[in-house]
Amino acid sequence: MKVLLINGSARKNGNTYLALMEVARILEANSVQTELVQIGAKPVRGCIACGKCKSDAGCRCAFDDDLCNRVTAKMRECDALIVGSPVYYGQPNGSLLSLMQRMFYSAGSLFRGKPAAAVAVCRRGGATAALQTMLMPFQIMSMPVVTSQYWNIVYGRTEGEAALDKEGMQTMRTLAQNMAYILRQQTGQPKPQYEEPTPMHFIR
Image: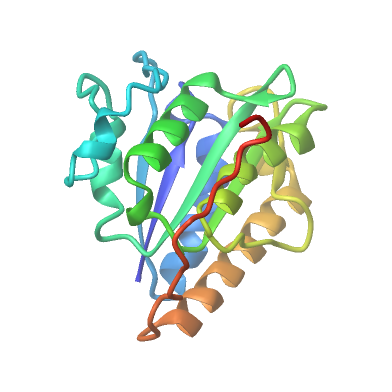
């Protein structure tokens, strides 16, 4: 069992990193491998709806000059996904949203049916809105959402302050325990057989 964690903060060792590392520590203690990818400070393209990925059997985005395809490829060997982001104006980091949208659109088959969770880290407010934004794509991708004892939120402003949020860090540990439990239940079990999508538009 292996979980991919994506740190959506440009700060390598900031509070989002601390929160995700607390999750990773408990997952590893439960015999679940983890791999952390940091989004970094380099630009991440947004999806331009070109549709070229739909003609690519390799599940790749047409843009190959940022980390999208490299991160997507890791999901071939990972059983679950956790994304974390600082809160900017009540929203996740825009680069993380661009990454998520392109990954799911170009390589949805690598994510579908795999458990997922999101973590929001903020100074004061806007965390629930940012968390909801990150969770919505999981629901479209048929990814079971893993919860905790509270919303997956950690508070902290300056680097390292998140470690002082005792309840937040406990929430991260409970999230990890729940993720490990769900992965154990899925071990050896076939994925659900999904129907072919039948999308409808409001305007015809």
